[in-house]
Length: 361
Image (cartoon, rainbow, N blue to C red; front, side, top):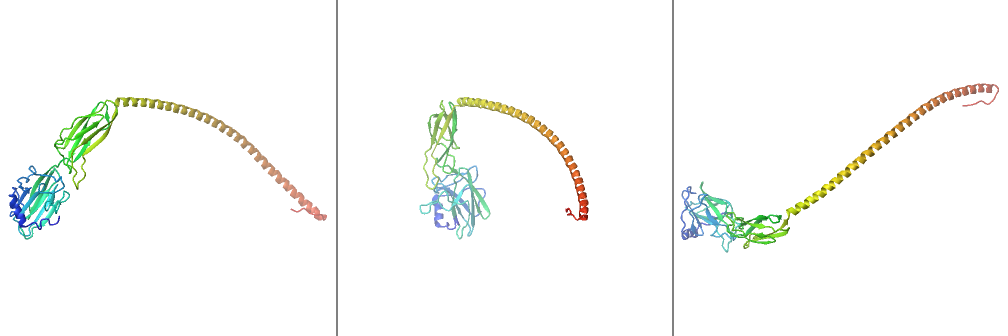
């Protein structure tokens, strides 16, 4: 919203001040010593709102239209030319004017801060609305002077339903169903009685919701296991431009028999115990067999190692004997080769003498 008050200074503004008969709201620190700030709601002057303990109560715009019934009109007069009026809002929103058929203003419109120059005029106005029932405020600053006003929204009609439905349930027992009703903006709505319907169980009729929008119902489960259901609903009308109302909730509940389930569980655990004991026994037997096989294998390996060592010793002895024989044969062969070479030399001498063929090589 840009310069939302720049063009608000007119005879129309002054006339409206006279028509609604509004007068100055009392507060300890005026926004400006030379100006006055008048607050009104739907044409009625407001005399509260300067303290957080006595906020202005205004309806939230549950119909998604910002009109004079749910927006505080703030009229500032007696301003010097070119005075700047700054406004900041907390949990609230600022608009230049309420909705009209030609210029609709929705709950999604508005800003949280604005600053405008009055120009050549001396008056300006704007509107403030809130969507929450929590404490809201807005501050008007003029020439360094500030005034703060406090608001609280009055919740709109029931719009959304939420509930905490316990599941599972247990035969012949009971549980509490917690129910909460809020308006379209999430504010708690009191004095609403939700409708409840059940299948295969009984339920108490909820009381009217309290100031926190909460009520409850006690549901009693049947005496046999199975499936039950709970349905809750409120009367609500969808608002155009806002999320669809959550008017109903339904939930199925598994109803269990703890005693029977415990007995079945014990039977299963007993079977598991037997199976585990058998597996442990089988494992012990397998371990004993494996240890026996290991011992037998180690004995066989030792015997085989001994046989190998004995055979190796005998082979080593025979190898030593053969090596000695080979060495002796080499010596004998060398001697025979020497004798042969000597005989060849003697023969060749005689052969040459008597002109016979000699032996070569």
